[in-house]
Length: 256
Image (tube, helix red, strand yellow):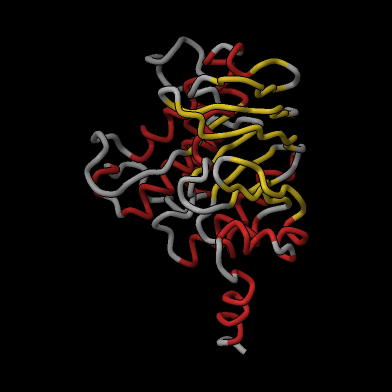
C-alpha cells in the first residue's frame, strides 16, 4: 500500500491561491474526511493530491515521490478520484459495464483501446455488484437516475483498484439506504491497507465513516485529528460559524 504525505501545500487556479500551507499524512487503512464550508478549498485539495492541478509550493508525495512526477498511467494504479457528478444527460451513451471498465484502463494490457480481458470484466462486474447496480450492466447511463449514475462512477473508481481513493461528495444523490451501503463499502475497502480521502457535505455522514477529519476554512487547515476529537472541539463551530453540535443534538433528540 501507499504512504501519502502532503507538505506545506499551496495551490489554486489562474494565479489565485486557494489551498494555503496544508500538511498532513494519510495512514494506510484510514478514511480521512475533509470538512468545511463551501469554497474553503476541499475539492482543490483533492485535485492537487491526484495531480490534476499544478502546485505553487510545497508538495504531495506518494511513497516519497512527488505525485506530479509519477507517469499518468502508473499514477492511475495508485490513486483514483471520484469527482462531483451531475444528473441527467451529461454523459455519453455508454453502458454501465463499459463505463466501469474505463476504470480498468491503467491495468489493461495493450492500451486504451485494447479489448477488455476476462479479468477486467470480472473486476468491473464485482464493483457493479458491490455498488448495488447488478442487473443494470447493459443499461445506458443516460437512462439512469442521479443516484444510479453516482454509483456507476463509484464503481469505476473502485475498478481501478488503487491504493488511495479520493471521493468528492460521493453521497450526492444517494438515498439513505445507499449512503449506509457506501459507509460499509468504504470500511471494507480500507481493511486491506488501502486508504480514502473524502469530502462529505453531511457532517453526520463524515463522522460515521471517518477515522480522522481535517477541518478547513479559507483554504487553511484549522484542525486535523481523530473524528471524536474534532466533533468535541469548539473549532467545529468556528469553522461553520454556527452551533453545529447544538443543532445535531436537537435533531438527534427527535428520534428519542
